[in-house]
Length: 352
Ligand code: F2R
Ligand code: MG
Ligand code: MG
Image (cartoon, rainbow, N blue to C red; front, side, top):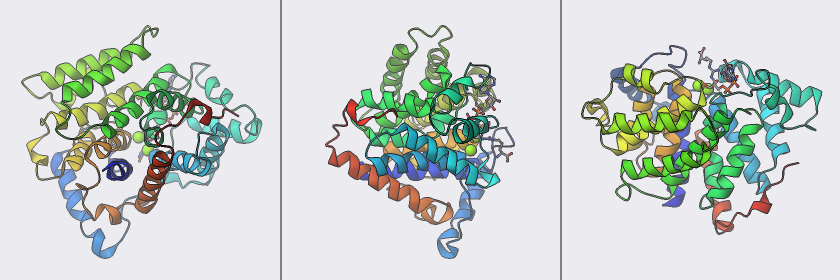
């Protein structure tokens, strides 16, 4: 079952990115019928084995992070930084990297030759660091690698984030997203209610934001709980106003969690009920609009880790660029996790 969850997380994250990327530039809610029509078109991929949908920076960076963890058997910041940077400069324009993250890669590659790994990110936005969702969008491999070791999960989620995103909201967003995947890996359908899942996330955020004045995640998680518990399902416009679906980590991560918890609470739109649970989460998250590839990939990573890959349609393996890579990396991370008997100690992590 655990291998199915690892593969489910990687494949559903890929699906969320590939499908969501089609709507990211529209920056508005996506009609359920539009998504159902797209799904119908994907079915032919199995016969034509045409990779009809490309992935974007979300998947590209997640796979580079996963490759580094698999190749080294531990987190090596310098290797992750160089993989991120080299891939960025080789990647085609349709990966659509974040508008400012290029500055970080240029400094890492040219100015410092990787001698100062965390400096370039800390200089972003006049020293504030980026609060973008780029550090959370790619973090699910850390959750798979650290499965069973929450302390190391939070440490590696922070380190992998700080290579490009130094703002506390981007770092906490990566920890929250990775922790949501870990809770999903450690539980299964019927073993945990949406409120129990939410409470685990809230307990984490209470700890992470104890010294953070704005408490942006605390407020957004409280709002999510209220919206899910409400009699009337909130409209996408109301969600957008109350929580947000934008490029900020605090918005996109909370939107992904909301979409997953709504489905876990069995409050997903009836229009999507013909789909598998994982597909419902991916499609519902994208229907919220905004940063659809990033919200979709993070919602998919959580849902796939929770439900496993059984519920995924076989044509998903043919429809998306990078599907074999996603499945192989998930399998290798599972082997790593098993081999270490889930005892990934703090000393496995090297900073240089
Ligand atoms: N780049 C995109 N989408 C562009 C539209 C593509 C569309 N598909 C099309 O067809 O046109 N998506 C990707 O970028 C997001 C992740 O970005 P990341 O890695 O966090 O980058 P960055 O530049 O660090 O942050 C993003 C923007 O947020 C604002 N910002 C961040 N920190 C700020 C701060 N401290 N002060 C002010 N503004 C801040 C800036 O505008 C940044 O550029 C994902 O959606 C991925 O899919
Ligand atoms: Mg993207
Ligand atoms: Mg995006």
